[in-house]
Amino acid sequence: MPRCVVIRNPASRRALSEERLQAALDHARAAGWHVERVETDYQHHGMEIARAAAAAGVDVVVVNGGDGTINEVIQGIAHTDTALAVLPGGTANVWANEAGIHKDPSDAMLDIVRGVRRRIDLGRAGERYFLLMAGVGLDAEIVPRVGARMKRLLGAASYVVSGAFIALRTKPRQVAMRIDGAAADASVYWMLISNTRSYGGLAEITYRAVADDGLLDVEVMHRGGVFHLLADGVRLLFHRHDRSPNVEYRHARTVEIATAGLPVQVDGEFLGATPMRFEVAPAALTVIVPPSLRSALFQQPAIGPVDAAARE
Image 1 (cartoon, rainbow, N blue to C red):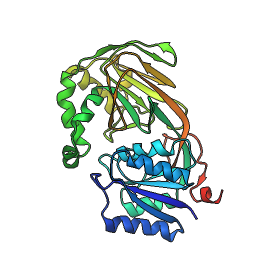
Image 2: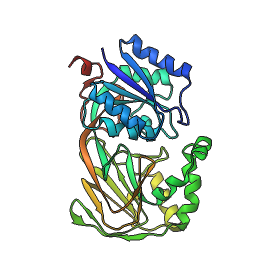
Image 3: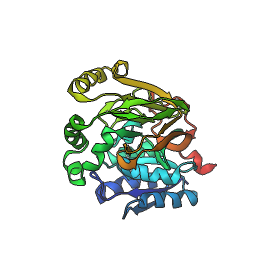
């Protein structure tokens, strides 16, 4: 019998009602799963719950929340056999969309109980893991200025609204850094260090990313301003922005930024400022995805059905 702990963030923008959540959990119980529910009460509570679940040998941690709650949870289950699954309930639900999870909670729970396990990489910024991506510069300036009220009202568009003003004010910085140990100093307006493809559910900026290849995708935009933003925005629509002379795109295992004072965000949450080391943590997380999912985000075969973990 698979054991799962459902971590619900009641403060999430799209947190499920009690009725809809219970209907979803009934599908797990009908499939023979043992289900325990816990709600987060404070910052980092999700990490604590997840860590305790992994230590107790729980098979699956199901997150009903957004990408920020997911980021908390992966801190507690990275490098364990406990798998991550998601009932979407946040602002953008980027990982749920990348993983092909249904938006309807009952359908999403069926995706989970019928799902397959995959082992994927994580990124790490300093001591903090990230599932999606880390941003340095522009977007990390934006993240702390988007309040909870604006996120509830506008969703993912709240970042666009705030970003439009900040983007025109932000100036590039000359940055001293090393990529895979080699000097790679550059003028940096905005930098993404990505494990996945979709940026905030708005566009596939790091569209070549593969979540289980042991590499991170690094994209640097050197200059800002109206002309470059518009030109690179048009190229982005056709997945040609990485051919722009203003953009540098590469794969890497490590990125070390020595220059101080550049803001950093991970998975849409403000983390701090450079200097900072970023690195890939290969095969650090088990995730549950629908068995029918066909996505270029994954290259390695699934490691088995979700209920097989409970029999091992």
